[in-house]
Length: 274
Length: 332
Image (tube, rainbow over all chains, first blue to last red; front, top):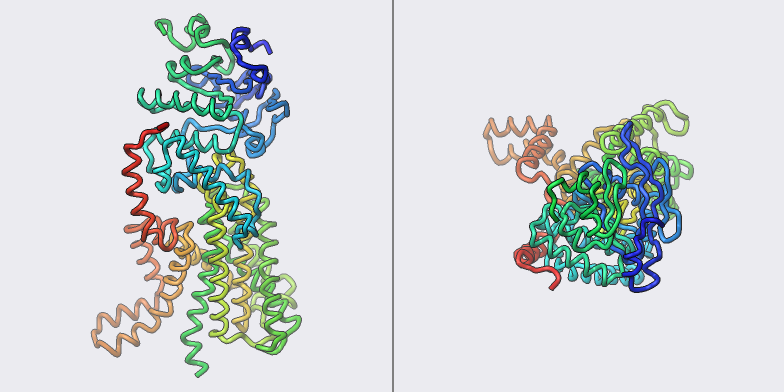
């Protein structure tokens, strides 16, 4: 647990914050001769907001793919909520409470905004195919619950009025929000956000920051986010992990990272002033 | 009198069977987005299962026993096609796109070739399998087809509006997103494939019972292509679209057949009659014409992914909401 800095522990409000919800130990992933991820070790505590930064090609998205089971690690272990999830299929990991968004938005483009949220409840549905076909009472009750909960999420994200629109017809910023809403609607405990502010203007980015903080507080979430927008990362992350060429080169609080010479050289550029 | 009824109902029955096939293929190709080219085989498996079963009992036509065996034979056809759907689906559905199309096409061809030589005393060999029971009159078979269409369409509609239907569409739209949302994609794909196959098997039973003879050549690739055209015309993912698409394409053939004769009674225009005669001899021309029209005017199909009624209310409402949401501010 060497990656938990004493300052953050001191800053924590309760004991439960020290509980490591996610622990990745020494993950390695190679593509051919390229070591995309080389010895990645990280733990994310309950209700913590951690930023993962690094130059393009550093292996950040690959880490996300390993954690969510879309790709399997060559070696290393992943523990979530004290259960080993290494090598489990993606849908099982999702059932355990780990959800994510994608750098290139993966919405169901030809379905409505509401339907996009509703699919997040798939894993919680208890009625079977027969219930659905005869529209049994159980089916109708669960579908009503899904509808109500989905609309609540859309309300939080300011998308309720657009619920009948096709997801593809939303402006880019709203598509990003819809994807976050969908990931959240799976009732996950850890959210992995892959460049949530990509393509957003400064106003949208600052709205997004408020939104992320808001949902983290409201749903007691842990969040791990990849981001290139330094302002966003420095403002909302409690802890930042910096990757370069598959390796972690620095960890710490934002203000520590800011001054770290290795980070400045690898990522921020030598003339970075902060 | 009998003959007159048959002239009307025989093409209608064919259209009805095509409607069932179109809905079932739409569950696989349209909803779940798996490109299957093996549908004719499942239709054939159903037909052969139903025919072999009926030949075991050969009850007199329209007796109480006949209807009992009819129901049992149809259920057996659905079961047989579903089992084969499962056996083909489990290994093949790991393949994506064109590779799945090739694998299912190969299965359909193997099925056809196997029928030519495998146990001819049971399956009749290349000349086909004769039914020991008289064939059902087309008007009765048509009534049953209508009943089946209602049941199947209602089934598909309820499925589309359930978690399973949403999951199928999620897989079509974005498989990786579906996995991350907690969907067991491999399981759901097999499920959709088995459901689609067994409905095709049911259609096969009706086909067998309304014919004297079923032969391997009834279940060739052209049949699959035809059904595929129907669902593309109607709109992939739309049940209403499948019904309309199947009716349009299946009724083109009988309509053009009588066109020259009917037109001859009204007009004596030589050129027009010659054109109509050309269409009668080559009904494929009409299909080609319709397809060109479709691609030019409405590439998403007549109904797109939507159902009957969507264009009456929902779209207007959603457009108003779209305008409203443009100014909507989040987190208020």
